[in-house]
Length: 337
Image 1 (cartoon, rainbow, N blue to C red):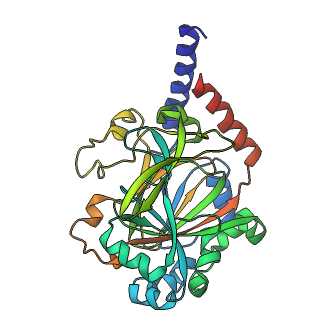
Image 2 (cartoon, rainbow, N blue to C red):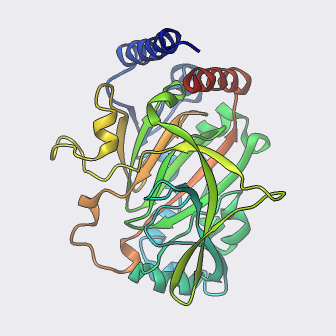
Image 3 (cartoon, one colour):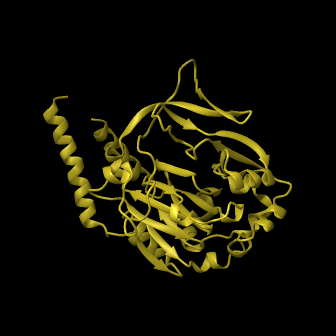
């Protein structure tokens, strides 16, 4: 392809980003308390717009919101439970390594929940409960009754028949989730602590410097990490992933942004929101997002597990899957050019 054609493709993509930034609200919209399912479908699911619900009335009735504040409660309830723990040297799981050589999968170990809690206090190695594929049902049965459902999300997405997974997350800094997207309607609920989320439209992949990376996994033995390239049929699988490291600076209102990610995306910054206990974030299918612990939130926090953040998220089958998948795929191909 000639340079002039490549420049024309890039100019088209940049024009699309500029147009979206002008049409969409400057900040993620917020609702308070109750949510009407029809309004949610019309104003957010249909146009693929994220929204935050503060103080959701359904979540306010979940026992988890009060019970999970007490780490002792969880320790007792999960005393006989083994959980899948992700271990990394730096908190980057399912992300490009700091040296840019590989897409790294975490080391994983099946450990008693109390062992995870003890490791979480030290964070050496960095541990995170981040198993997906319906981890809440498969590994957290004793506390499953502490979490209810979101009637407005069920009504919008078809309820249990379209609910693919409910996942449980627990971790603290320096764990981060790098830029990625999911083929699900994602409803993310923080139940303890806080998380900072940044979002970009599904069409902005070209800005995230997505490249093919050889896949590898961390191995953890005798208190030492080592890198092991993954092999499939004699070949190392390749994963397309953003080469940007997750954001490492706090809200721009509080101090200037300095990290490479923020500098690169400065022309049209990602939408950003901090979620606290009881807050719900709807992330439309195929929307790029990253989640990080804000350094300000952890400043002065003790090293107990109670300072960790806990969340659950609901993955519903996408209601506009064909359109969303086709749009995302088309823009991926344009970005590759």
